[in-house]
Length: 342
Image (cartoon, rainbow, N blue to C red):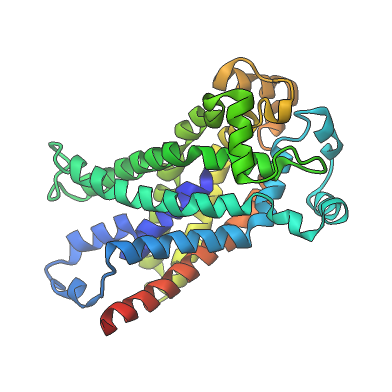
């Protein structure tokens, strides 16, 4: 959940150099530099979607080992065959994976992650533009409504597009969690088998377990990421105006990701556990819905239980954001060159 919001925000801000920061500069400097934007080549919609989707897929692949460790820690103790992970460390669990499952097991579920990334990016970008156009028709949020209106449209549009994309691609996210959570015993043999087995064992609604936690966290995740990113970026540019924009974006993006992860991680943990309810014929553990599951975990495992796996999540934020920025900018340059040649 945090990653989807983070990647979506990064893609939106990279192309324009920071949504709110760009808006602020536009309102304060348009008298002095009215023609500045005309010299920057713009990508078409399809290349833009392709660059964003591929950047997200490459980042997910490179950070897949940490992502799988996060999931395994999040669901530890949920069932008896997961109890061996209690009081373990990242290094011990990583060593166990290599010894018992082999090095390739770090990428369990990564194929479905990539399959999820491309449609998610396409839907979120497309929906963002549509929601933005609709919101700008609302009184007070017009294009000329000022800096506050511009930020409001971007926040609302980003949240709504994230909810739309997450809802439409959620079954793939659930399958990814179930494949990544499997250790020695593999009940699901792949993407298609997992989709079929879930529908057979749990019904069609089984593909949407944990969706409520996902939708509840999308808005706050994007809002926190966006707010922290733009605040830090604007302050940095004022204090050190000659620093590299890439360095600024990378550092601020990483810190915004850490802030977003910290704020929304308990919801992400609840989502993962609800996604595994009834998986592989296991007995259900939580029977009281989203808030009941949250309360059950807090009562039985305490506050620390809601943050199981936060350390590997933190560890993947910096390389994840860096890889997204690097891949996106590289692909954007290549695709812009190809369009210019045509």
